[in-house]
Length: 390
Ligand code: GDP
Image 1 (cartoon, rainbow, N blue to C red):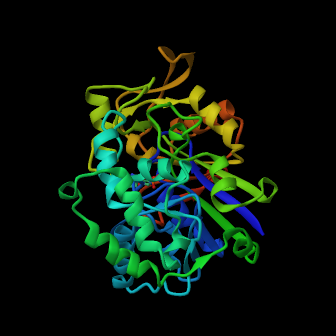
Image 2: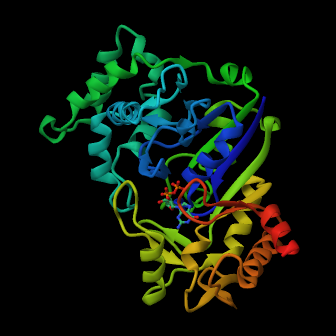
């Protein structure tokens, strides 16, 4: 078995869903290793825009088997709807969709707790943080309990501990229907199950700067979005990990509160928001925008042992009147390099940008994405070769 990893190097929304969709064809298994239905991977399949919250983006390849790994937390109602939507697209998932048995459940009361306590962090209020908190408090509900005879009483017991007035919990029916549905989805003992497959792609959600340990605490998510999450969330030994694809957007965005050293405001920020469609796929919130931040990326590249870079959304910057990159300085006082903006992705100016990124991060660029569609993708070596010939 070999495991390759796709993870985000910034604050999420780097375009990992599209990257996984493109890479998935050469893997047997695509496995999500952390997170819950807060992440929204947006991708395009046969011209349709699809947002996945829990199902790995590999699902659109009929030969690929997908796993929601043990490091994840699952909202049964949302997962049920997502699987039914996949069926409606005519894509069968039976026999190629599995759940890691140690993943935990999100209860309706977790969502209320999130609303009550997550506001200052800017969470998506999907109950994810409280579900992880219960997991670590050793009172959560792992999904292998779905098949225990005392499952219902365990759920009611935990919900009672949350002490939420019943009128504030809107969705028990949705929960129980989702539970009924999930009982039919096969669960696996992930480490053993994965060892029976040769090519595994681990799919991260959110970005490294939102990691619970290594992110910009407390404005972080509740799980390990870094490489540590692969080891913990899928039960994979580190030696099995080969390539680590670090996905970075050509500029930086951040949803919600928290530090953002290269943030910009005004016209250029609006350019990025409008051309890049920078609003959240889960919440619809407008994303804050700023320049690429190389010193911060150096840290996340190091932390994850990134072997290959994948650049996304450089097309969004085509024609931008001004272009800068942070190359140093303190977070409070960053220093920038002004770069020549590019009109198209064949221009020298874009190549200069890539060279600067590669040199600064000390890792080669594997590929870059040139648009949201699956076909909008170039291997960097091919692009270089074509350029040399022309
Ligand atoms: P993820 O959570 O990392 O998968 O990122 P999101 O799905 O939240 O956001 C990425 C958005 O950018 C999606 O709407 C993608 O369709 C889109 N996208 C991905 N790659 C590119 C690209 O290279 N260019 C453009 N213009 N859009 C892209």
